[in-house]
Image 1 (cartoon, rainbow, N blue to C red):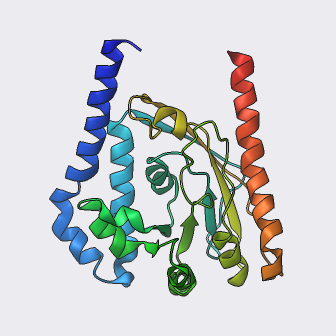
Image 2 (cartoon, helix red, strand yellow):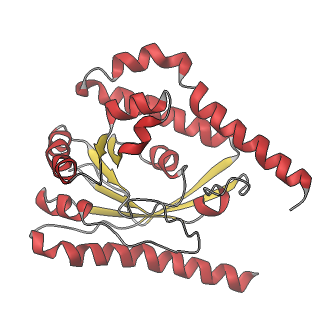
Length: 252
């Protein structure tokens, strides 16, 4: 890698973190108000969605969205995207019009400014605490009762090994979907790892391809079916990523 490219990526990454944090400050008073009550969450979601689209735009990313079917808002959904990058969150906000709530890890509450609002709007889970994991179900039920969707990255954490196509899924999203009889929506993000991985000196602006797959019904399923539901969802995303990787190898 040339010195020029190192310099470009350094400036580009700093540009991201500057926008990520400082763009929140001008609307801080408004965010305080709209996060003060769960009833105002749809307003917050619209602001968050505009923020995410702005971040993606200024970073030079363009979303290329493919949908196997148009999701009709007749009931709540459980969105299950693969997780490879920090920008996965921004992509999810940008592609989804109906308000949803993230179930996210506790560690993100430590990020200055962002963590404050993250804690006020998301369902936080401490994976090292069994009580915290159990509490997620109660908090999710309240949000589902409000007509919101839920988004869980079923891998839990971004794999340290970037050669991993898709890490094993955790059980939480599938148990929750079965308990409340809401359909699973698998989502494949093809390019986030390549264009903005956690390896600092890597990535570039470009097209972010996303595919929203057909829903997987949970109607009539019981909790003992959660493993098969998890496997079915995993295979949808894994097969899509594996096929895409093979096509890239052939084209190069």
